Length: 366
Image (cartoon, rainbow, N blue to C red):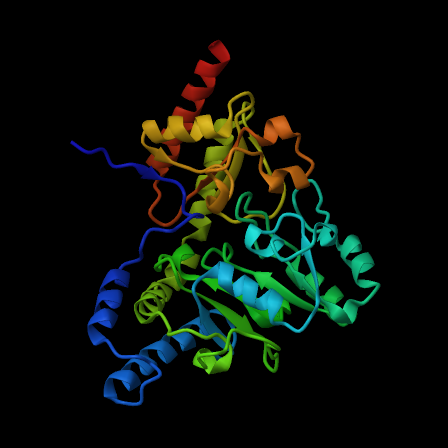
């Protein structure tokens, strides 16, 4: 008999929302290229533009400002390379999809909770602010800590810079409104909200133009070339139909998070404990036990968790996010991420806490 694993890795990929697989299958059956003018092509175009409207509504923008991409990584690349700003500044705790485009000297420090140092941002923008784009995530993918995006956007605009927000982890876990945040570009991804992997979007502020793009094919209003992923976009749209329910469940998830943290402390070290965080994310260290050892042990016990960001969890190294927060390397190397969602129960949280304490007790006795 196959045992069902307890899935506690929602920040890597959320389980598919109801209706997503059916919407994708229907899109495949529909066929047609959205760039074709015949009936099949027009039907594909209507489907894509319908989902474009859903994405725009979800973040307080307009459909014409939504550019579909292959995911959050490509959307980040597009924002940082086609903004017309030659200088990229970013916080030191950004996702690798952002830091890859930011010179190490342009990574800005954070405090002990992982929040951007706004004074450092002001200082960095004091010279050539007009030539800069600032990239700041909405919520950290490892710790769940929320960034001061609105404050950073105000500082950036005062210096003549623009601000890009990687909202991949925050989207679906907290309200996202581009106008309230004051951001110029916003990245979202489907598979973090129960849609399929391989599709995301970059959303522009009204009037913002991209100066250079991969526009050889002319798709996405000439801003991103390549035939649109019809099935993926359809699945994204189906997932967005459940966005309200996801947000409504956040209070319950916050109770689960506090319950888990209370069960693990004081033996565990919880990062960002006193900061504003996502309701579903716990970054916790088991002193003396390597993160990769924990991930394997929990997997054998039937629990799916991760060590750091999903894209780098296979690498044996301490989390750059925690190191940027000033965490000692030996402690950072023992941190794992537990993330959950609407399908997670109290019983599952309690079972994981019991397994955590069992593993910790064994290691202490060894």
